Length: 386
Image (cartoon, rainbow, N blue to C red; front, side, top):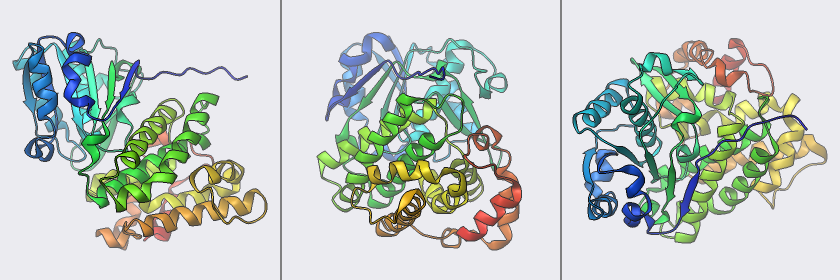
């Protein structure tokens, strides 16, 4: 068997309502002065209040940084780090969607180690140590609570990442109650994002693709495929919400160790330039990238087709199952109410060439794709998606 490594968050709590016990679960680890990183919407809704009270009940002083935006900027990260240093924090809580969790990871790293961010960008460059870190996701999509990756928007358009086991948190707390109020559109986009994580992880050509990631990817697709439409159409269904949150986490564990590829690489220019939410960016290019990959990856997509869609009416052989799987993914996005075309999110045909050029900057992702993808291929995919 090919050697591999598998790293994940060491402690995972899955329990509805558990965020109100964050102090009991993680207070000792986080210490007496805690920075809680979130976004203004969640703060206004009061979703953080139970977690904050539980930390304060354990004697901690909590400094709230609630200025995180979608696709967080370098300026926002720097402000979070400044807030943490000013409060002499001993630990960090990330509370929210992937953006808040990503900022929390790097705030814990930069305050804890004092290292320069410019030296941490890329794979395995962050050295640490980081401060104690707990992550509480409020969307079922990114899996960021179990991934060693943080993505930040630098300048107007460019996205850069830090990828290092150092920024895996000490504890991930999955509380399905926090996701009950998610609007259908966000539920749909983040759910498809999680499915993309599982699909790309399973088919990744990364040398660290491994049996554990494959197993987790398949289990994730089973949970996500069976529950995404219920969660979108009946957002108060706590069982479906819990299944989506767990599926998202399992997909996160999978791609944290067997990394994603061209779907994400082509999604980044859509989000970075046009500020389309990440999950929707993935959904817009997903079927087109899979069709491009099919000549090399049909057998892999065929293997997972029934995990996501047990009742799939597939053709004969791997090619037939692969084709049916791709068409069903496109149909799922339509049923979920997601915009189907790039033009539907304000992207003009004149923008496609630059997007293709920008996608080539995501070399760390493109190397994992089942089929080599050049700039001309990226442009053809964008045209098909337009």
